[in-house]
Length: 339
Image (cartoon, rainbow, N blue to C red; front, side, top):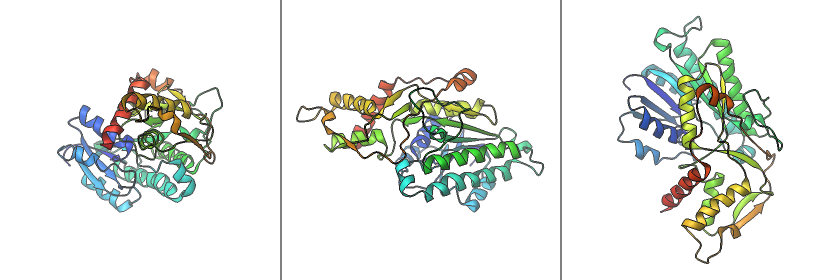
C-alpha cells in the first residue's frame, strides 16, 4: 500500500467492521490494511462494502502467525495498529478455552513483538520514521470482574476476571502495559462496555432476541434475567476509539461506556417493544410471550458498569446516540438483513 498505513486486526468482526466503515467515512486519505482470520464470527459481506474502495487492502491471516506479521510490517508503512482481533463469546470460552488463550494472549504477544521490532531501534527508542506510531489495544470491562448493585468500573479498578474469555483479555491487557513500561512501545488501551448495533454476530444477545422472536421461537434469557450490563452503541464506540488513538496519552487506559445500564430482561423488553411496533406477530400477541428462562451461564457476572469520566473529561468524548434510537437502528438492520 502507498503512504502511511493503519493495520486493523479483526476488521471483519462486529466492532472492527463498523470501525473500518467509520474510517472510510472520516479519514479518506488513510490507508487501511485489514487482517482477519475469517473465523465463524467474521462478517464476510463487509468485504463487499469495501471492494471498490482503494483505501482498503484485505489480508486473510492469523495474528498468531509470526512470519506473516513480519512480512506485513516489511511491505507496508504501518504507522498504527488498532487491535480488535479476539475470541469474544463467553459461552464458547467456557466450552472451549484453548482458542481464547491462543488468539487473545499469544496473538497479542505476536503483534506487540512485530511492532517492537519494526518501530524501535536497538536502544528501544522509536525510529525517526515511526515517531508518531502507536498501538491501540481494544479490551473489555469484563476484565474487572463483577459489581454489586452500586459502583462502577474505572481505569483503576483491580482486575478480577471470572471467565476464560475475560482472563485471556486481562492477560493481553497486561502484556500491552508491559511493553510500554519495559520497551517504551507507544500503546493505549480502551476497555469498553457491551456494544450493540448493526453487523453483530447472530450468537450475541440482541441479535438472538430478534432472530428467535421473528421465527416464533423461545427467546432464551439466562436465569432470572436480572444480570445488568451497560450498553454502548457501536458507532459511539468507534468515535471513542479514534479519539483515543489520535489524542490519548501513551501508556494510559480509557474506560468507555454508554451510560445505559439495563437488566437482560429490560433489554429484551426494549427490543420486543420495537418489534411489536414495526413487525407485529400475526396472532396479535406480544413477542414477550416467547421469553423463556434457561439455565444460568456458569460464572455469570451479575453487573457491569463503566465510569467513563476520564475519557469524557480529558478527551472530550461523549456518547451521542440515545439508547432507544440506537436500538431501533439495530432492530431495523436485522430485519432488513433477514430479507
